[in-house]
Amino acid sequence: MGINLGYDPPSSQVLALALRHAILPKQYGSEYGLHEEWGTSGLPQHFYTDAGIDFRSNHLQQIGVQLGFVCHLRDRPSGGGIVERPFGTINTEFLSTLEGYTDSNVQKRPKEAEKEACLTLRQLEQILVRYIVDNYNQRLDARMGDQRRFQRWESGLIAAPDLLSERDLDICLMKQTRRQIQRGGYLQFENLMYRGELLAGYAGESVVLRYDPRDIITILVYRIEGDKEVFIARAYAQDLETEELSLDEAKASSRKVREAGKAVSNRSILAEVREREIFQTQNKTKKERQKIEQAEVKKSKQLIPVEPEESVEAVSIDSEPEPEMPEVFDYEQMREDYGW
Image 1 (cartoon, one colour):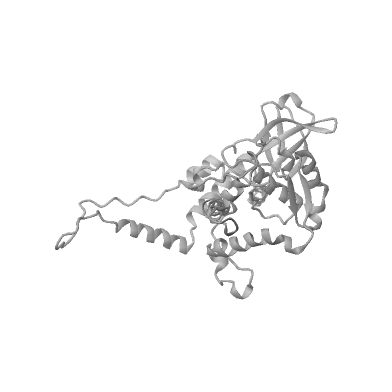
Image 2 (cartoon, one colour):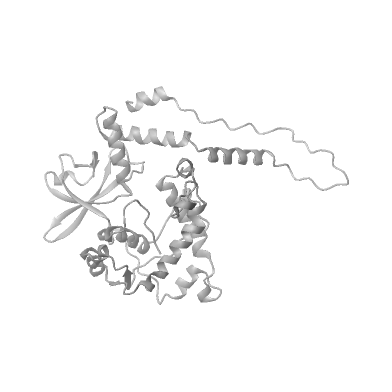
C-alpha cells in the first residue's frame, strides 16, 4: 500500500509518512522506469500497528481522529506475520542482490561490502519502488487462486477509495517547527533562505513550518488561527528549486561548507550538492565499470540479422558506430560559477 524509506528509527512520525504515502494516489516519473502502476490508495477504516511505545503516542490517535479511521495496537506477536513476511521477501529477493549488501548475519557478511556500496538513498528508493510495482504487486496471491496481489486488493473494494489531497494529509508530515517571516516574505530554515509569493504580507508573524525530511526544497507555511493551523503558502529554497535535498543532506552540506572556511548560503550549498553529484558520477565502483564495459562490448557485438544460407563465410558491417564520448567538466569554470 505504501512505504517510507529513510534513516530514522521506527516512530509514530516515520509511520505517519508511510501512511501518507499509502493513502495518496502514486505518480512516478520516467526515472523510475516502471512498466506497471502502483494503483493502491485510499483511506483505511482500521489501522493496526505494533504495540511498541512509539506507536502508543497521541500523534497517531490525532491523525486517526482527523482523518476518520480507528487505530489499533497489535495484541499478539503472531499478528505481525503479515508485515514480517514482506520484509523477509524484500530482504532476501531484493536487497541481497544489491552491491554493498551486508546481511544481518555477520558470518555471511561480504568482506568487500562497504567498498562495493554505490547507491544513494534516492537511488535505492527508485529501484525499491520498481521492485514493488513491477514484481511484488504483480505476483499471484496463493490465498486467492489466480489473482495477483493488486487484483486481490481491488476485488475487496466495496466502492472506489476516497481520494484525499496532499493538503488533507498535511497532519501526516513528519516534522514541524516555528519561524518568523522576514521582510519581503523570506524565511530561514536549516541554513537555507526560503521565499513564498504570498508571505510578504505576513512579515513579522510567527508561523508553523511543515516539511518532509526527504526533500526540504519546498516547505509548507501555516498561520495559527485560534487552535487551528491554516495553510498560507508554499515556500521554496532560493536557487535550489530544481534540486532535491533531504534534511540530512542539507546538514552534511552545511558542515562541509563550514569546514572549507566558506559562508553557508543557498549558493554555497548548491555548489556542494553539484560537486557531490559529480563525485558520484565519476567514482563508479569497479563492478559498475565492469558492467558498463560488458554492456558496451555486448552492444558492439550485435550483428545485423542474416537469413541462413548453406554457407556463410562472414558478415561484415560497413560502418561501426563511433564510441560515445565521455562527459567532460570544466572545473575552472565551475569554480568561477559557484565560488569554489
